[in-house]
Length: 271
Length: 302
Image (cartoon, rainbow over all chains, first blue to last red; front, side, top):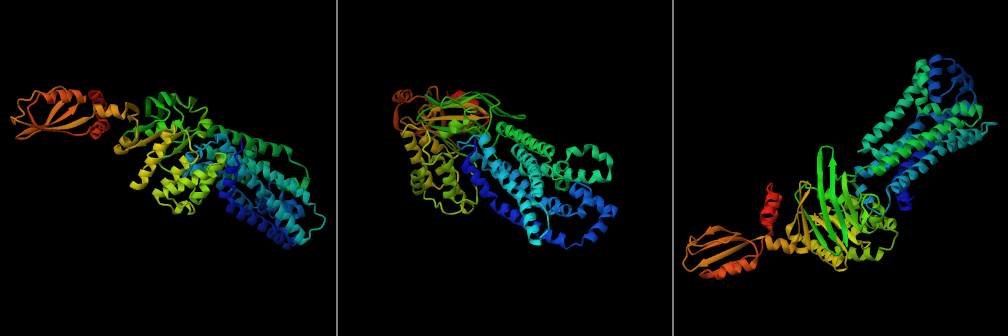
């Protein structure tokens, strides 16, 4: 089912993007912890009492912003920071959307699909390569936070709590990557696949923002992937969010399977 | 045994019918030419055979296996060159061939070296630095390197210079001599005539001719120049299949479609000073097929 030369080639294709993303996430999280440590706790408490800042930060971390005055709260912001999302999503959209659709766009699918490797194997090999690379990026968030904490020396902070948040981030990435790979496998062009994937993720961010301003949006919040990723709550409660993680993993598997079926039955007409 | 067999193969894209029910049988060891104007359906038929397209109706079998359901097994035994070759531009030629070889299970290194020398291609350069002709050579090496039982080549001589074309012809002849099969599409009549045992002409998604080259030659027009002792052509009683093309003071040029013995028999009854008989002109035959009245031309000539 898995074609190792294809896995290696896919990793080779996206290695530079992956290395820069990994280094970027790691470096950003370390610097972010330094920055958070430099903010006096009293100032943070004053800011968190300003209503619009509370709401804004709540949308970012998916929980009550007042919790941010605690060390785990401040550190959890790094797990949802727009910079981290930007790098993770850039990788997901570029690599996952590109894994199949880029082959079609550049015309190399004619070569690949006529070699003796089945379509399920092409799909599985490319998407597993992308998924493995993406999961490593998710753990870079954890690694950056851990290194940052070690350097600044936060006392009595258990880093294994952050591992739970990182695991939650992994399942969220599985869902986003599953969607991106599926769109890549069935879309006629890469641009369309990326645009739709971006639209779905953007909808998640917008809905997450709206639900803090507009209570009616809360009723459909479950349709946003951010509903299933709340690092602050995870770190506050230090409990595994099994339900959310299962929902994201299942979503990823459903999208991935739909993409597999679509890819196996589609045509590759001459360009 | 037929290596390729299609039965009422149909392919539709929305409102467009690319193939309207083609029946094709290609025996093992043949070099089979696939001719037709642009958009006739040649590429669509080839892409169905290699599993890139699903037929809308009908059946396509390669090595007796279903081209859709058993495509992976079939692809182990074929070499395919797309009509519009595209590769991973950042790879070198050597890396691309190693990648293809790895997927095929390795073992083609010696053949790659032989073909590289044969086609005189620098495999250490990045593909993005290759010219169109070099990419075509790389595509041919990729299709040939594992010594496939069946080669499916979509306009393989595109962008190749005459010397490389000759090299390719030699390779294809040796492939056929080993009992392996070649199906290739072309617009160049001379290479089809030169190489093929058999040819199918496709137009508007239908096979309008499927014959051996020798059968086509027998039906092709010959130019016959006659110098008559009495000069005038008026008195000539032309047999069926002969048409006057031009009259001169001392003779006439006629076009002849038919069997050679009938022509010789008719000529023997004439009072001739001289006679010249040209080779069968397939160009006219194919041009007639390519034109709108191709089907009518096919019927008239058969």
